[in-house]
Length: 58
Image 1 (cartoon, helix red, strand yellow):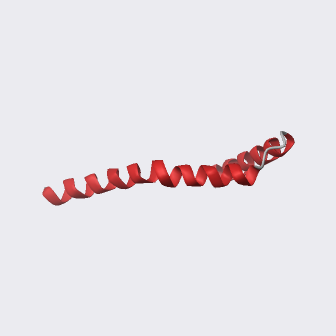
Image 2 (tube, helix red, strand yellow):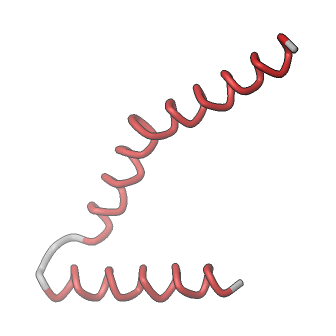
């Protein structure tokens, strides 16, 4: 619960700062989600797949 509060406060501060700098915050969030799904999630899926295969071999 404590960490979700920190994440929410951090996100609000980030959006506020980006708006002060005249940067489109929603474009930044959309780009971050796109980057995560393109580059980070496949590695996470590969990690769990390797763990699954190792447990099935034993």
